[in-house]
Every structure is written in C-alpha cells, then in structure tokens.
Amino acid sequence: MEAAANQEEFYTAAWEMNQLALYNQYLQEGNCSSNNRWRCEIEAFDRSIQEATGSTFCSSNTGSGAWFWFTVMTTVGYGNQSPVTKQGRMLVSCLAWLSIVYFGVIAAIGGSVTAVIFDDFFRKLRLK
Image (cartoon, rainbow, N blue to C red; front, side, top):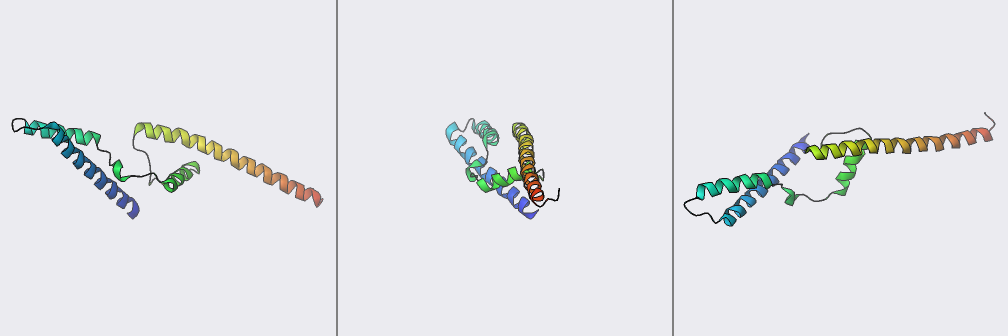
C-alpha cells in the first residue's frame, strides 16, 4: 500500500509542476496588461488546469505494462494500476476479455498436448 501512496504523491507532484509551468507559459503568452491582469490570470489558470497532464515525467515502461496485462489476463487484477478515463476503461475491458479468452485457448491447447503425451505414455506401458 505504501508504494501506491508514493506513486500517487509522485504523479500528483508531477501534475502540479506541469500545471504551474503551463500557467506561467500562458501568462507570458497572454501579454497581460495592468487593466486585464486579473482576468488574464484566471484564464491562464483555467487553461493550465484543463491541459495539464504531468506526462513530461512519465515514460514508457515495458515491464510495468507487461505486469499490468498479466494481472488482467490471469484475472488477478491487483488494482494498483488502472485507467481513469471512460475510453481507457472500455479499451482495457475489451482487451481483458480477449486476453482471458486467448489465455484459455492456450491453456486448453497445453492441456490437450499434455493429455496426448500421457495417453501415449500409458499406452506404451499397456496400462490402458
């Protein structure tokens, strides 16, 4: 649970830093004069809140992605990583069902091959 809390703190801090950088950028782009300074600051703040992602601190992590799909595919689903958008949840749900079916097919093929091997072994021993 501690790792999840540390992750949350990290990503919250990353988002806040991204939001602050965007806010300062939008203030500079807005050329705020003394007459409309307050309105300009509000618009820059609103725009920075809407567009901040914190993604500048994120990178592609193949290991974490593989672990995520393994937990989904095996239906363990630890819950320490999950999508937050509606589209992301729909995508993961669809891919999870396909992964589970694919995992079942692989397990069935493996079981069938194992059964054939044991059947052949017992036939050679004349135990059947």
